[in-house]
Amino acid sequence: GAGVSQSPRYKVTKRGQDVALRCDPISGHVSLYWYRQALGQGPEFLTYFNYEAQQDKSGLPNDRFSAERPEGSISTLTIQRTEQRDSAMYRCASSLVPASGSSPPYNEQFFGPGTRLTVL
Amino acid sequence: ELKVEQNPLFLSMQEGKNYTIYCNYSTTSDRLYWYRQDPGKSLESLFVLLSNGAVKQEGRLMASLDTKARLSTLHITAAVHDLSATYFCAVDQWGGNQFYFGTGTSLTVIP
Image (cartoon, rainbow over all chains, first blue to last red; front, top):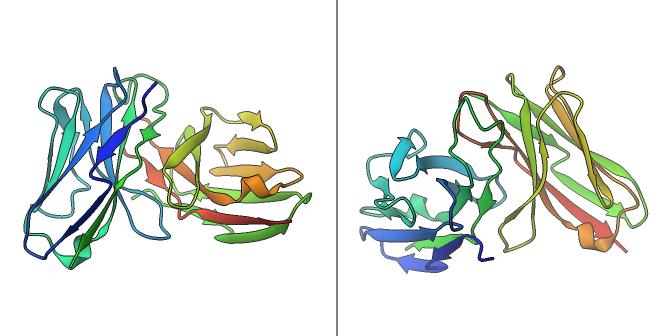
Protein backbone atom coordinates (compact mmCIF):
# COMPACT_ATOMS: atom_id res chain seq x y z
CA GLY A 1 0.00 0.00 0.00
CA ALA A 2 0.99 3.63 -0.34
CA GLY A 3 3.10 5.16 2.36
CA VAL A 4 3.19 8.70 3.66
CA SER A 5 3.68 11.19 0.86
CA GLN A 6 4.87 14.77 1.01
CA SER A 7 4.97 17.57 -1.50
CA PRO A 8 6.85 19.31 -2.78
CA ARG A 9 9.97 17.25 -2.26
CA TYR A 10 12.14 20.32 -2.70
CA LYS A 11 11.24 23.94 -2.17
CA VAL A 12 13.50 26.92 -2.71
CA THR A 13 12.11 30.27 -1.69
CA LYS A 14 13.28 33.76 -1.00
CA ARG A 15 13.40 35.21 2.48
CA GLY A 16 10.09 36.79 3.42
CA GLN A 17 7.93 34.52 1.26
CA ASP A 18 5.30 32.18 2.66
CA VAL A 19 5.50 28.44 1.99
CA ALA A 20 3.01 25.61 2.40
CA LEU A 21 4.18 22.04 2.81
CA ARG A 22 1.75 19.21 2.30
CA CYS A 23 1.53 15.79 3.92
CA ASP A 24 -0.72 12.94 2.83
CA PRO A 25 -0.71 10.24 5.55
CA ILE A 26 -1.25 6.52 5.16
CA SER A 27 -4.94 5.90 4.56
CA GLY A 28 -6.77 5.27 7.79
CA HIS A 29 -4.03 6.62 10.03
CA VAL A 30 -5.50 8.76 12.76
CA SER A 31 -2.47 10.61 14.09
CA LEU A 32 -0.25 12.89 12.02
CA TYR A 33 3.00 14.44 13.14
CA TRP A 34 5.29 17.14 11.78
CA TYR A 35 9.02 17.16 12.45
CA ARG A 36 11.98 19.26 11.40
CA GLN A 37 15.30 17.56 10.83
CA ALA A 38 18.55 19.45 10.56
CA LEU A 39 21.47 17.87 8.77
CA GLY A 40 23.17 15.32 11.00
CA GLN A 41 20.50 15.50 13.67
CA GLY A 42 17.48 13.50 14.68
CA PRO A 43 13.99 14.74 13.86
CA GLU A 44 12.66 17.46 16.16
CA PHE A 45 8.95 17.43 17.04
CA LEU A 46 6.87 20.36 15.82
CA THR A 47 3.20 19.47 16.20
CA TYR A 48 0.70 16.64 15.91
CA PHE A 49 -2.96 15.95 15.18
CA ASN A 50 -5.46 13.30 16.16
CA TYR A 51 -8.02 13.31 13.35
CA GLU A 52 -8.53 17.02 12.60
CA ALA A 53 -7.71 18.27 16.08
CA GLN A 54 -4.31 19.76 16.74
CA GLN A 55 -3.37 18.20 20.06
CA ASP A 56 0.06 19.64 20.69
CA LYS A 57 1.85 22.49 18.97
CA SER A 58 4.46 23.09 21.60
CA GLY A 59 7.30 22.32 19.18
CA LEU A 60 6.45 25.05 16.69
CA PRO A 61 9.35 27.52 16.90
CA ASN A 62 7.29 30.71 16.73
CA ASP A 63 4.02 32.11 15.46
CA ARG A 64 5.21 32.14 11.85
CA PHE A 65 4.65 28.40 11.86
CA SER A 66 1.17 26.92 11.73
CA ALA A 67 -0.41 23.65 10.73
CA GLU A 68 -3.85 22.39 9.90
CA ARG A 69 -5.59 19.15 9.06
CA PRO A 70 -9.15 20.27 8.32
CA GLU A 71 -10.65 16.95 7.27
CA GLY A 72 -8.55 14.64 9.36
CA SER A 73 -6.47 13.42 6.46
CA ILE A 74 -4.13 15.70 4.50
CA SER A 75 -2.20 18.24 6.54
CA THR A 76 -0.49 21.48 5.61
CA LEU A 77 2.41 23.08 7.46
CA THR A 78 2.66 26.78 6.65
CA ILE A 79 5.64 28.98 7.32
CA GLN A 80 5.03 32.71 6.91
CA ARG A 81 7.70 35.28 6.17
CA THR A 82 10.37 32.64 5.84
CA GLU A 83 13.84 33.23 7.22
CA GLN A 84 17.12 31.55 6.34
CA ARG A 85 17.14 29.71 9.67
CA ASP A 86 13.95 27.92 8.56
CA SER A 87 15.98 25.96 6.00
CA ALA A 88 15.76 22.28 6.91
CA MET A 89 14.14 18.98 6.02
CA TYR A 90 10.51 18.92 7.13
CA ARG A 91 9.13 15.44 7.73
CA CYS A 92 5.66 14.19 8.28
CA ALA A 93 4.75 10.93 10.01
CA SER A 94 1.49 9.13 10.60
CA SER A 95 0.35 6.58 13.11
CA LEU A 96 -2.57 4.18 12.90
CA VAL A 97 -4.12 4.87 16.25
CA PRO A 98 -4.68 8.04 18.25
CA ALA A 99 -1.68 9.15 20.23
CA SER A 100 -2.82 9.09 23.82
CA GLY A 101 -1.52 8.56 27.30
CA SER A 102 -4.07 5.89 28.02
CA SER A 103 -4.10 3.80 24.88
CA PRO A 104 -2.69 2.38 22.74
CA PRO A 105 0.41 1.17 24.46
CA TYR A 106 2.63 2.34 21.69
CA ASN A 107 2.78 4.79 18.87
CA GLU A 108 4.75 3.46 15.90
CA GLN A 109 5.13 6.24 13.41
CA PHE A 110 5.69 5.90 9.68
CA PHE A 111 7.62 8.68 8.04
CA GLY A 112 7.28 10.38 4.68
CA PRO A 113 10.19 11.27 2.37
CA GLY A 114 10.32 14.85 3.60
CA THR A 115 10.36 18.29 2.00
CA ARG A 116 13.75 19.94 1.72
CA LEU A 117 13.18 23.67 2.29
CA THR A 118 15.87 26.14 1.33
CA VAL A 119 15.37 29.81 2.11
CA LEU A 120 17.70 32.11 0.22
CA GLU B 1 12.84 18.03 28.96
CA LEU B 2 13.53 14.44 28.02
CA LYS B 3 17.00 13.92 26.54
CA VAL B 4 18.07 11.00 24.41
CA GLU B 5 21.74 10.32 23.83
CA GLN B 6 23.30 7.82 21.51
CA ASN B 7 26.83 6.60 21.31
CA PRO B 8 28.87 6.30 19.38
CA LEU B 9 27.86 9.06 16.98
CA PHE B 10 29.99 7.57 14.24
CA LEU B 11 30.94 3.93 13.84
CA SER B 12 33.13 2.38 11.20
CA MET B 13 33.39 -1.37 11.35
CA GLN B 14 34.58 -4.20 9.18
CA GLU B 15 32.29 -6.75 7.68
CA GLY B 16 31.84 -9.76 9.88
CA LYS B 17 32.45 -7.93 13.14
CA ASN B 18 30.03 -7.39 16.01
CA TYR B 19 29.22 -4.11 17.68
CA THR B 20 26.67 -2.41 19.93
CA ILE B 21 25.05 1.00 19.71
CA TYR B 22 23.81 2.51 22.97
CA CYS B 23 20.81 4.73 23.60
CA ASN B 24 20.39 6.44 26.98
CA TYR B 25 17.40 8.55 27.93
CA SER B 26 16.82 10.84 30.84
CA THR B 27 13.35 10.07 32.16
CA THR B 28 10.99 7.22 32.84
CA SER B 29 9.66 5.59 29.71
CA ASP B 30 8.53 2.11 28.82
CA ARG B 31 8.49 2.64 25.10
CA LEU B 32 11.49 2.85 22.85
CA TYR B 33 11.74 2.79 19.09
CA TRP B 34 14.62 2.20 16.69
CA TYR B 35 14.68 3.65 13.20
CA ARG B 36 17.05 3.34 10.26
CA GLN B 37 17.74 6.14 7.81
CA ASP B 38 19.64 5.68 4.55
CA PRO B 39 21.31 8.77 3.03
CA GLY B 40 18.72 11.01 1.44
CA LYS B 41 15.91 8.70 2.47
CA SER B 42 13.19 8.68 5.07
CA LEU B 43 13.18 6.89 8.42
CA GLU B 44 12.27 3.22 8.46
CA SER B 45 10.89 1.65 11.61
CA LEU B 46 13.03 -1.25 12.84
CA PHE B 47 11.92 -2.15 16.35
CA VAL B 48 9.33 -1.19 18.92
CA LEU B 49 10.26 -2.10 22.50
CA LEU B 50 7.42 -1.84 24.98
CA SER B 51 8.58 -3.16 28.32
CA ASN B 52 11.54 -3.72 30.57
CA GLY B 53 13.59 -6.63 29.34
CA ALA B 54 12.07 -6.58 25.86
CA VAL B 55 14.29 -8.06 23.20
CA LYS B 56 13.59 -8.13 19.49
CA GLN B 57 15.66 -9.51 16.64
CA GLU B 58 15.53 -9.09 12.91
CA GLY B 59 18.31 -10.59 10.85
CA ARG B 60 21.67 -9.33 12.10
CA LEU B 61 20.12 -6.70 14.37
CA MET B 62 18.94 -7.24 17.92
CA ALA B 63 17.47 -4.55 20.16
CA SER B 64 16.90 -4.66 23.90
CA LEU B 65 15.45 -2.38 26.53
CA ASP B 66 16.33 -1.90 30.19
CA THR B 67 13.90 0.65 31.56
CA LYS B 68 15.48 0.67 35.00
CA ALA B 69 18.82 1.71 33.54
CA ARG B 70 17.04 3.86 30.94
CA LEU B 71 19.12 2.15 28.31
CA SER B 72 18.48 0.48 25.01
CA THR B 73 21.05 -1.31 22.90
CA LEU B 74 21.14 -2.18 19.23
CA HIS B 75 23.50 -5.06 18.65
CA ILE B 76 24.91 -5.81 15.23
CA THR B 77 26.10 -9.33 14.54
CA ALA B 78 28.49 -10.15 11.71
CA ALA B 79 27.99 -6.83 9.99
CA VAL B 80 27.47 -6.61 6.25
CA HIS B 81 27.75 -3.59 3.97
CA ASP B 82 23.98 -3.34 3.56
CA LEU B 83 23.69 -2.32 7.21
CA SER B 84 25.48 0.98 6.52
CA ALA B 85 23.02 3.72 7.51
CA THR B 86 22.20 6.10 10.34
CA TYR B 87 20.34 4.54 13.25
CA PHE B 88 18.11 6.57 15.54
CA CYS B 89 16.49 5.64 18.79
CA ALA B 90 13.40 7.50 19.96
CA VAL B 91 11.48 7.61 23.19
CA ASP B 92 7.98 8.72 24.04
CA GLN B 93 6.51 9.11 27.47
CA TRP B 94 3.42 7.42 28.77
CA GLY B 95 0.91 10.24 28.97
CA GLY B 96 2.81 12.26 26.41
CA ASN B 97 2.79 12.23 22.68
CA GLN B 98 6.07 13.68 21.51
CA PHE B 99 8.79 11.50 20.14
CA TYR B 100 12.23 12.44 21.38
CA PHE B 101 14.93 11.30 18.99
CA GLY B 102 18.54 10.64 19.71
CA THR B 103 21.28 12.30 17.70
CA GLY B 104 21.76 9.21 15.59
CA THR B 105 24.63 6.80 15.01
CA SER B 106 26.15 6.84 11.55
CA LEU B 107 27.28 3.32 10.77
CA THR B 108 29.67 2.47 7.94
CA VAL B 109 30.47 -1.16 7.28
CA ILE B 110 33.71 -1.58 5.38
CA PRO B 111 34.09 -4.59 3.08
